[in-house]
Amino acid sequence: MEYLFAEGNGRVITGKDKLFGVNQLAKAAIKEHGKENVINASIGVLLDDDGNLIVLSSMIDVLKNMTPAEYAEYAPIAGTAEYLDVIKTITFGNHMPEGYIEACATPGGTGSIRNTISCYTKPGDSILTSNWHWSPYNVIATEIGRKVYTYQMFDDNDNFNFASFEGKINELLEVQDGVVIIFNAPAHNPTGYTPSNETWDEIIAILKRCAKPGKKITFFLDIAYIDFSGDSDKAREFLPKFGNLPANILTVVGFSASKGFTFYGLRTGAMLCVTSDAEIAAEFKRVTSFASRGSWSNSTRVGQIALAKVFNDEVLLAKVFEERKAYEDLLAARCKAFKEAADEAGLRTCPFNAGFFITIPCENEDAVNEELFKSNIFCIAIGGGIRVAISSITEEACRILPAKIAEAIKTING
Ligand SMILES: Cc1ncc(COP(=O)(O)O)c(C=O)c1O
Image (cartoon, rainbow, N blue to C red; front, side):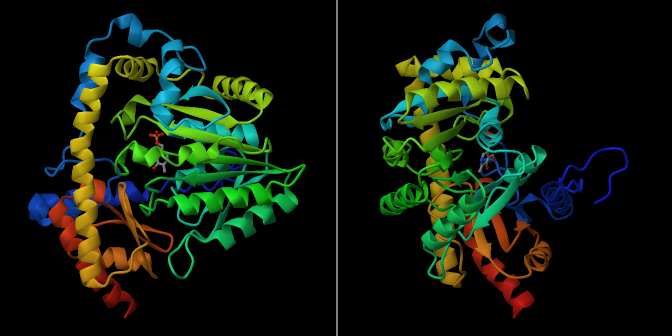
């Protein structure tokens, strides 16, 4: 990659946006063939069955009742006092891990990823994530001079690949003092996978084994989809497992209000540390504020104020949860329909149980995806597979798609 005036600094900046390109094709197909004849499973936001963005009206009511000073004023760098008061409850609910917990507001979950990498790695270090992952992890890491290393997420039996996970952590710890691991769960993007309780126990046992004296592990838990991964209280049950870990394992939880509270564009999030060491927690507070100041300065105030109002008012909170429950059910019904139809069509998918996305592993994914275009079906080809956003299609489309994808794979790969 050559640059004219800009400095590449190890970044691959193609300017091509796969998602945007596919979405344009889907829009053109809708124009030509009508909405009812097109399945656009490329969009990673929650849409209703008519293709409109779902926005929680209970959250919007709160926004509409704010005074200008509440939304227009600067927020403190680490977040407003009201937000920091409720963020632990928003994130952990009834399942607070034991240990020292500090928080810093960030612009969406993205900000928490950026700050974790910048604060807990050295320039040139590699961070670790699974082979299936949200592609912006690469952008965020390379933008600040870090690299991405991956482990195989599933073994041949489609179980979590503990051996690969442990092996790659150890490989990195041989050449680095520490490693930041980015782990997206529950309802992983792009597979929809959620570890079981036993799987979490083994993951934590591996972290403890790998964190030898003199080495440090930062386990970044990206919970962007936690409020759309089944019952939101149950989905948090695993969180206390991150309490009381050895001091050389730091857990950082990345909270995002984008999905759970439909605040996508309001850029509201937070990063929270869980550590058994008071000084590491105090340092977290200092370094994350500094990193924020040096990148986006303070985060958007309006989302912080809105969330604080909701979590300080039982009636409002019940309203938000009740409204969201209906959409959780809508998404769960789509997920179930896809699973049943995939079983019927004999379509092999990555293991999934919830969330916005499902992934179908296949060879020649670009050709398979283009084959689907011929049937007016629009998904996203990602390295090694096809990503279907069930968040943006109807339950009926979820029933149709698996057979169509199986057929396209057969046409291309035989
Ligand atoms: C896996 C994952 N992590 C984090 C995010 C962060 O989103 P935001 O910055 O909008 O909160 C997203 C958004 O799509 C995501 O898919």
